[in-house]
Structures are given as C-alpha cells and as structure tokens.
Image (cartoon, rainbow, N blue to C red):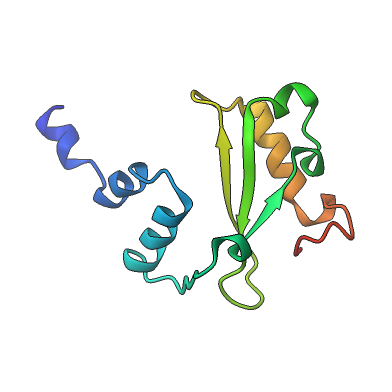
Amino acid sequence: MTTLSKTLVDPQAEKLRQIHTIPALVKYLDEELGWPVQVDDWENAVYDWQPEELNLKAEHQIAIHSIKQLRPLVTGQPWGIFFVDFDKGQLPIAVLRRMLNGLVIRSRVKGSGHQT
C-alpha cells in the first residue's frame, strides 16, 4: 500500500469491513455510531425472511443461506438493517436488485408477519 492510499483509508470503513456477525455489527452500531441498539435476545431481535418472500428464483436461492432483518430501533423508523448470508464470493447484482425490490413496501405480501 502506498503512502497516499494509506491516508485515504477511512478508519470507520476499515472497522466495518472486519465485521462478519450480527452481534459484532450491533456492537459497532452501538459503540462506534451511538445508535440506540439494545439487543438481549437474538431470536426476538431479528425477522427471518424466506427467499420466496422476496421473489427470488430457485437458482438464486441456492447462493443465499439466510436473510434477516434487525427489528426497528425506534418507533416509526423508515428504514431497515438487513443481514444477507450468501456463498463466498460475490452476490450477482441481479439477485441483489431482485431481493431489494422484494423489500420495498409496495411489493411485500400483506399478512406476511413482517413489519412494513
């Protein structure tokens, strides 16, 4: 790494790149960013999504191990934090776009049990 590229490295981005688990990310959000993350029970702290709920084709579902959403941190939160565990390597952009489109409120299936 050159001297110039060392000075351009964002320390927060480097810390974020080292995070590989949900508990580690929540700790980062709480301690580094000061977000109001209070998680005692991981089973109740996340929603599990099924690939079918996001309109992913069967061939794309194979690469994805799990999709989880952290429950909202505050009432009325208009955005979400999602954890996608997928096969090593890159998730194809087409699969990522399809998944994100499935998370848009207007696309969600009513009565799925997930907060919109």
